[in-house]
Length: 235
Image (cartoon, rainbow, N blue to C red; front, side, top):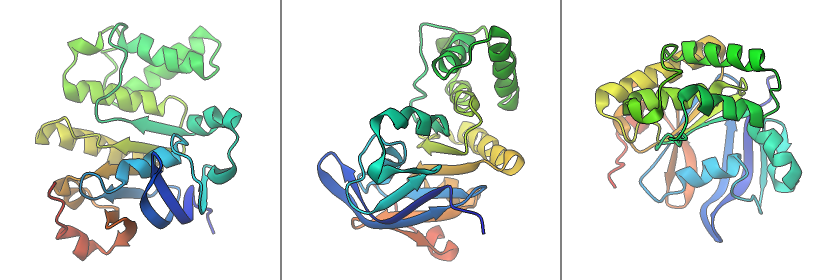
């Protein structure tokens, strides 16, 4: 049996000092494609922030990429995060430097010492997201969809075991959002990288199928496919 890449058992999820999700039980396996869905304020992003150790886990058990969150030492947090690729709704690119420099900054921060190695890896991830001709561009010269592709390239740099995407299509029109989803689905299918997507956009998880975890009424549970299609996620 394959060990889950992410596992929570009877975990309470915090937002600040307040519990927003009680008794979370969740297993995400290598190669899974999982949505965490729900209305705004139901704890979706707080679950992601717990996975990345931005939010502490004070009750229950949580294991992410082999690290036990409830007893994680502060000095080990950077090593956990190197196993994760995180994609944000607002891209979070450094606007004062080129695409290449954005990506090189991450590689230098995570121990890539040789310039030739960095250049090779940047070429690889830009090609993977269809942005191989954009290395010299500044982020502000790119469209929203192109910026999100660069953000996904950044997430791929250290060959993560899982990609965590928090509303990755939230600032994009439907056609551009479809391109981003097709890219994430392709990475999942080709590289077997697990993907976890937070969204309240029902169109997305109905069109691009995966497991659906629903946040509602201070709980989070897996929804059967036919029930997930009819979810009311109105803000």
